[in-house]
Length: 117
Image (cartoon, rainbow, N blue to C red; front, top):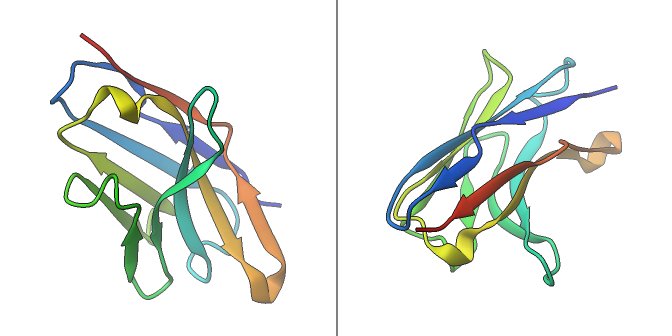
């Protein structure tokens, strides 16, 4: 069983920055892809950023150039650095660990990010 615990959310003014972190338990971290998703009221959950086991990354068009995903396999941690935040970035952010070869698909509990003046 894998547990994911997010932290780093909060209230920030437009143009500000936040860094989200997600720590995973279990021995499957290094062999798994990781992603950050978000869910805003009235919207469907969307992929924000994704990082593979080899460090390749992909981003939603809406966050390209502003957000950066990274992973630290030694610490079982995936981070999301969010800069130049906008009110439309307001959402609950979730981290996800997945590995289709092993049938793994785990989600964290979510952390609230609110961008408002």
